[in-house]
Amino acid sequence: MLRNVGNRLLDLGGYAVDFGNGQRYTFSGYVLGPGDTLTLHTGQGDDAGTERYAGFFSPVIDSSDTVLVEDSTGRIVAARQAAGTTTTSG
Image 1 (tube, rainbow, N blue to C red):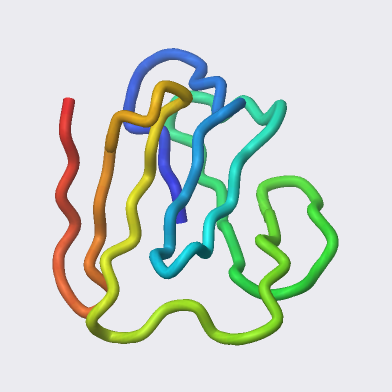
Image 2 (image 1 turned 90 degrees about the vertical axis):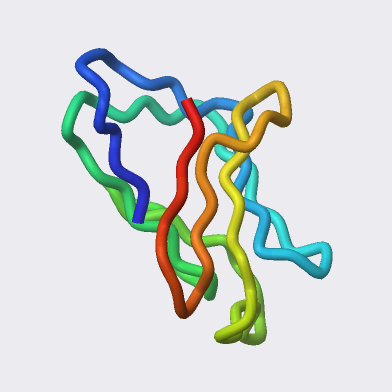
């Protein structure tokens, strides 16, 4: 789940979630309001509202993986270890 903890709109266009091992999902044309959340599922499904689907056919995350969120310039803005804690950078 992604949450906009800021106080202004966040355009996720070009942002990417990197699951490692070449598994990556890039957002296009989605704006997240202040305090709003968006759920990114790794499997198949139809995007609707605040639910997005990466479309992978098999599990992409195990307990040792770190999932990265990168902005449109490739800068890592958040990281979460699957079995651990969340870290973010300004």
